[in-house]
Image (cartoon, rainbow, N blue to C red; front, side, top):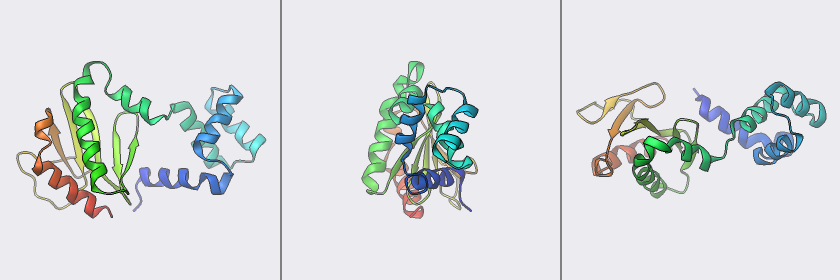
Length: 180
């Protein structure tokens, strides 16, 4: 079963072929229009550009979301959570070292790490903790590796850079390997 994140990624990847423009190009069209209401943006895309409803809805949502990855990550680690950014950076650097196919997909409150499918989720859960979700279905839980949610079967709570150690990196690599 395809996850909602995978479905969204597929729609975004298909935008140029199906509509003639990439998401950033459509976001520029929306910005030029001056429209700031979802329904009006959808109507404009459909009537003026012949975009189908599903793609128009996606473009409108992403345009209003301000989906600039740098901004999303910056916002997550602003203010009281700023001290967590070095842990986030270590996780992302390690993820990139796993392979050239790693996709870093920021969202409003978390960052997905994907390959063919999501293998990890980085969430600044509190002012002092990052929850690193890992897709490790079937793995035994222990004092560090806990059960989590439907998207990521397990999580590791990280409060310091040192806690992102060889053991956690091993679990992350296993999740990455399984996602290919």
